[in-house]
Length: 302
Length: 272
Image (cartoon, rainbow over all chains, first blue to last red; front, side, top):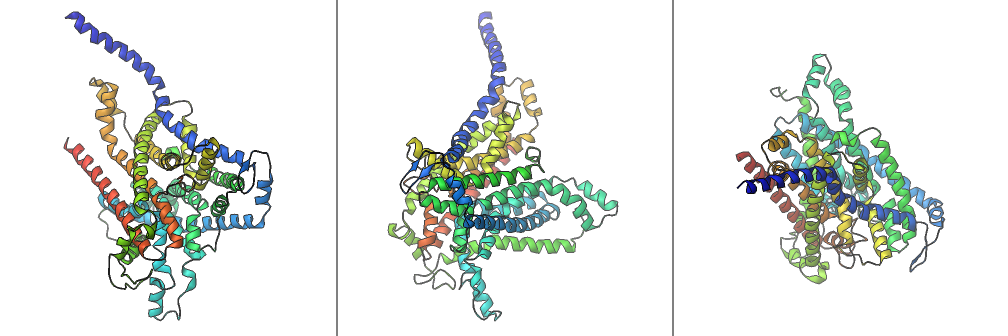
């Protein structure tokens, strides 16, 4: 009997000892799958792109080499610079619009909706479209903005314009509109998150001290919402900088972006040229993100 | 604040919010209606009769390429990505609760995965597979490229969840004699279950709709978003809208099911 009792006791003891040693390596084991996947499918491909960007190529294949012509070709061309400027222009416009829309939507949800349940319902209403297909959401502008679309036919029928406006669809206007439509939630969510964490007594204190509504907004709420705005900015700017489908579909091929230029090179099998562009774009995007991360510590904001 | 009268600011912002919702749903409802366009109708209003013609058209092979096959591939891929995202994010979330060497580097690697332009990942994985001599396929290369998009979301969500998770519950369980596995399975897991379901939803829908990362990595067979993207350039009939309606309705169903599951899990927990 005693033996039978002793045995599990001993087993438990040795198990506890083992658990201590497992406890030390546990975080490494738990982090391994993530590190492996990101290593193989993120780091390795980026390294490969950096290597390939120095290779030679013709219409059929790539040849290992160390050439800088891929870079000098792309950076020496006026078209490339224009494309980069165009992409940055989209990023700036879409950023400003999503920041404006995102802040006021988040502000309305956080400070004007009184019950948490209603806040969640309305937030979900905003979220649902973002979980559906991006391409479908782009296409859905065609019947609205097209030459005979809803907007044009309504305006013509009301007699406000003599003939349909041509620049509603397949234009830079359409690209910006679709991007705001696609990416606005990425601004709403982080700002909403930071606004929800603002202690309401701070606002009451500001009011008691005699601050007007605008002063509360400008001196209390907006400074406290800055981390959320920074995270939203990271999302929106990187998404716009990487975009090729919205530019292609919504401009009808009349506008260009860096990623679209890369995609065209890829379809012509000019991988080293596309890789050189990829390196330049990646450096640009990472510099922008690093700049924003100097303002905000993501780990603290989660 | 709660019993104040509604201010003028409220009505202005409420109108702004309503416009935003209209902006989000308006175009989507337009294609929903237009997918029931009559047989002779075009891509824009007005409706030229009402029919299911374009939905029937969807299942004819010549009209839209391989709708059934691409849907099946995207669905299976979405499930694969979902399962791996939930598992790996949960493990990584647990890892980040403790200090370990390389934690900061791994965290920023996950953030990098989020900000690196998707077309670069697509190109990189495509070139790596080409150089190793592997054939890209939706269940290998595209699977990996989707994970670089879904995992950061999963990891960041789990990071946020565990940031707010009080260790007192685990200490209490341990004081009552629970083993570390029992503590995890009966205390931690039920508490974070709703968030895990949320991570699963993200994993599935992000993969199901992803196509910039699939561009160079899908191999011979297209996933559904690639098929739709191809159609945008060469299909000029409302069959495009019918496809949009079908995939959107499917996405809505997935979201509803997930919300249902989260509410169910929450209720069951409340009962205990």
